[in-house]
Image (cartoon, rainbow, N blue to C red; front, side, top):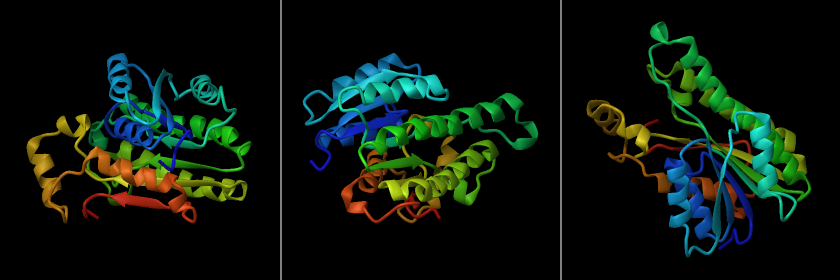
Length: 246
C-alpha cells in the first residue's frame, strides 16, 4: 500500500499493458486516472474491475496527442490536490509494414500517436509535479528500439525516441526531485499479439530464455517498481522486461 492516495495518471490506461498498470496501482491504494481515446466499453469494464480495490480508477476520454487533450487530463487528475505524483506514458499504436511498401500515413500516424503524447503529457505532467517537489514518470518503450524488428521501422523509431527522451528529461528534472525511467517490454500477451500470425509468435517465443510470452501484469510490476520509493536512486534507466530475448 505504498501508493495510498497518490495521484497516478496512465495514458492508454484502459487496455492491454495500460489496463494492468492501472489496476495494479489501484490495488496499491492509488487514485488512478486512466486516459483513453475511443473505446468507451473498455473504460467501463476497467472501472467495474476496480470496484472494491483499496484505491480507485477514474477513466477520462482524452486525445493526448494534442496539447488541449493532455492539459485537460492533467487538470482533471490534479483538480482536488493541485498536482500529480506519477505519470505513466503508455499511449501508442502500431502499423507494421516493410519500409519499401509503407505509406506516408502509416509512418506519420505512428510518429504522431507514439511521440506526441509523450511530449504533451510529459510537459504538462512535469508542471503538475513541480509544486510537489517530486514525482516519477515511467515511459513505455519496446525491445524493438534495442534489437530492431523487420516491418517496424516506424514503431522502432518512436520507441527508440522514447528512450532518448527519457534519458534527456531525467537530467532536466532530476534537480527538481522528479525521476524519469522507461520500460521496454518484449512479446507480451495482449490484443496486439493476438493479431499476429501463430508462426511469428512461435518464433519469438523460441528466442526467449524463459520459453513463453510475458504477461501484462509482469510489465506492470516493473513499472510499479520504477515509480516506487524502492527505486529512489534510479533515473534515466530503461528496464528490459523480455523473458531473455535480448
